[in-house]
Structures are given as C-alpha cells and as structure tokens.
Image (cartoon, rainbow, N blue to C red; front, side, top):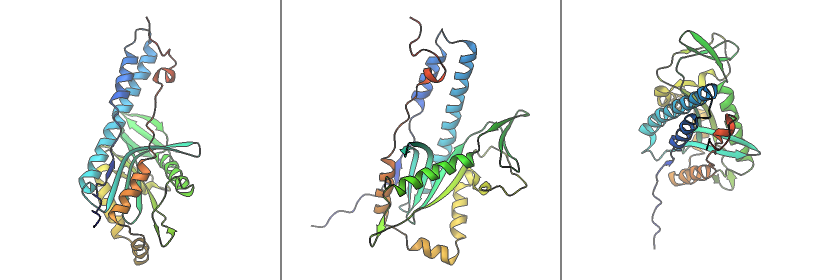
Length: 259
C-alpha cells in the first residue's frame, strides 16, 4: 500500500502572543504602591514591547505574503532557544530548500537611525539623539548561537550520502519602512544587511539572482525536498522555550501589591 505524501505546511511557527506581557505590565503600573519614577520606567517598557511587537508583525506580514504558500521556504517567527548556557532570541528565520537561512532581527524605532563611521548606532527622535546597542552585533550573536547548536547536534541538519549538509546563515536587520537610515560614509562591516522591511523580499531575490555560477552550483547540490525542509524547520522550532518574565523583580518592587 502506497504511503501518502506528507502535507507540506511551511509556516512552522508564529510569533508568541505579547498581550499577556503588556497586561502584566499595565497591572504593575496601576498598583498604588508604585512611585512615579518606577511607573515611568514601566510605561516605557510597555511602549518598547508594543513597538517591538508591531515591528515583528510588519516583518511577518511581508515574509508570509511572499513565502507562506511556497514549498521552497520555511518560516519560523519568534524563536527563543538555549545552547551552551547562552540564550538566543531570534525574531524571524526564513529557510530555503537550498539551506539558505536568513536570520532576521527587527527594529522598530520612533525616529531616524543614524550609524557613524565607527559602526555606532543612534536614534534621532525630535532633534534628540540616543545611543543604542548595535543590532549588527546582536544578530552576530544569534548566528553564533545557531552555529553552536548545529555543531553540537542540538540542531540536526539534513544529510546526503551520510554527510551532513551545512546551512548558510545570512544576517538581516529589518527596519520600519517609515524610518530614515543615515548610513556611514566609511565601510562598516555588515552595514549592507540593514534593509527596510518592505524591501526585504526584493533584497533576497537580488542576492539569489546575483550568485556566480560556482555559488549557484554549491547551492544546487544542497537542495532538499519540501518535506525534508519542513522536518528540518520543525526540529529547529522544537527548541523554542517561551520567555518567563519577573516584571516586579525587574523594577525592584514586591511581587505582591498592597493589601
């Protein structure tokens, strides 16, 4: 009796619901024993969570619009996993049948993004500038975590003729389409990975179409079936461990409110 083919559904994991985080933060901010300064910090945290969730939704829409119904790509949103004592929180993974993996970090800033010649990031908002951590360096850590997970066999890659096929990991920083990006005049490593969310798919297609004959051949020999891709992506998604938040502890207040 013939075995029925596997149903290929390549939206492997959706983003975790952030509404419970926001609900818990709002309840904390509403407590009568919270002073004004602490309440201000909590309100900022709420805005940051809401802004981050909005950016992730925008990116997820663009990715799914182009690739949700494709058997050549698998999509994982909001992956959090641990490896060798380190935790990685990856906003989006887009994985092709050629084992090209796009590791996406989304940033949703209220102002313009300014990068100086030393690769330092700032946000220009209402004529004021604020220094921020480099998303380029942040995503490097995510890629290193994935590389460690593959090397340690925490992530089992597809194989052919007894040899494991090595995925290619690509870093992408996705910014809101409304952001203005002030790029440096100097050559900053990785700066080309900064793209607006609405330009991401065009960027992937451009990169693929720009492969040399040798690159195209190397990718062709790694191609796997849609079902193998699905299983590979599901194995990665199975590593996900949802974050647990101690908001009261973060803001230095008691876990229990006033009686």
